[in-house]
Picture 1: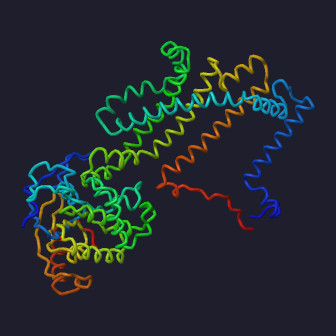
Picture 2: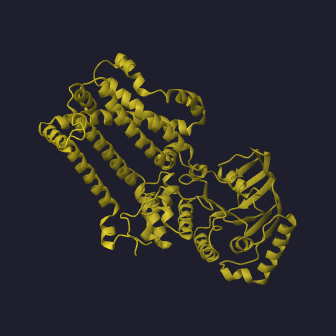
Picture 3: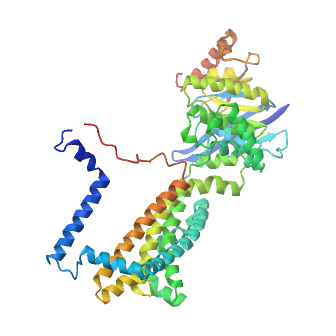
Amino acid sequence: MKEFSCLSLSKVYPSRQGIVAALDDLTLHVDSNEFLCIVGPSGCGKTTLLKIIAGIQAPSLGKLTFTQPPPQRAPRCAMVFQDHGLFPWLTIIDNVAFGMETQGIPIEERRSKSLLWLEKVGLAAFTRHYPRELSGGMRQRVALGRAFLSNSPILLMDEPFSALDAQMRLVLQTELLQYWADKRQTVVYVTHDIDEAILLGDRVLIMSRRPGKILEQHRIPLSRPRAPQDITRPEAADLKWRIWKTLQAEGRLKPV
Amino acid sequence: MKTAFPVFIRRFLSDRMLLILLACLFLLVWELAAARHWINALFFPAPSAIGAAMVSQLADGEALANVGATLERAILGLLLGCTIGLALGIFLGWSTRFRQLFDPVIGALYPIPKLALFPLFLLLFGLGDQPRIALIALASFFPILINTIAGARQINPEYFEIAQAYGANRRIILFRVVLPGALPSVISGLRLAAGNALITAIAVELMQGQGGLGAQIWWAWETLRISDLYVAILFTALLGIGSHYLLEFLSQKLLPWQIEQGKAPATNPIPEI
């Protein structure tokens, strides 16, 4: 079943250099419970696309249609950002609970659910700490908790692990796969890391340079549950090579 | 670094010790100079004479009454000015339209010396304590207002986007994003406002008696009781130090997510030699 569709989305906005076209006639269908990854060159409008889906920005043209009515006690979309994602002035537990707070869920329920999450990710000792006292990996675990606990049907992730070191990234990717296996929310995951897209996603879309549109898409030929070593399987390596060639032809992708 | 002082003297001369030592030395020289008539004791009474005046003022309750009167006016005015300044500042910081509308008004009113309005306030509010408190409120209103607007505006727009993405209503955005995000700047405004409130309180008392440290200073000058003059100035300085440390304490309590950032070590470590 389809979760939502983006129909001919275009987005232009004014900047000091004149008018910038971020998205151009982009059409996209996302199935329920699908893990969709989007890769593309830097500044290709991936973040703009996520913000339009989240309802933070309005498209200049085109429209966004959801199959389901908005949920009663949850925001439609939960977002995980690369950084700046947590409120520096809220304690860790209040940050985790924020997605529930906006839905008017009573404080006892928020607290107990948040505490359960923090115990699960090994941060139970940090409930009263503030984000700046935590490492980057710990902070993203908190941000993931906020997103998962909001119970939103759609999870939007904007390069959530790109600021982490390679090992921590792998750890969190593995954790994300586990949490997602429990919840099976619809995920749109933006990344510039091809390996990450193949490891996590059911399907990967390749976006063009700005103004962003979809160049091609691939089903990821790996079964679930997945483990980090799956990325070395021949079919994964083959797909990586094809995506890499497309992106290289599109140019301006920084070598990874 | 090589030094002429042995270690135990360097240890003894830690910053605070040095300050106290210098102050004692200064008072001692002053006392001696007054006793030997090197300086005119009418203008510079000996520290012992000032101390005696202070003790007698404390004993008969005059000191407490004056400090209390000044403090009461300053605090009432500060609370009034801050409440209005904070509320209006949050509103103007949030709403671009109203900010643009009010910007020239603030720009025009802010630089007016508030004391110049005191006669007008006397006309408007009568001769009681209201015109003083209103003027103190006005003097503390502007720093809070301007700092709150600036504080609300410098909040990273991403925090608003996160709140919006999670479906936060205006009340949650106000209490979870705007207020805490603007708070560091509001606290700096509060420091300025507290200073303004104290200055204005004493200034209006100087101009128009009715008790308080300012009135005491003026009365001591008119009757040439110079020791009392010094005592009043001393109490004023003590109020300044007191409010400084109180606000320091308050900002650490209100900004727990910031304290470690600029926290200096509690004691100055002595370098090993």
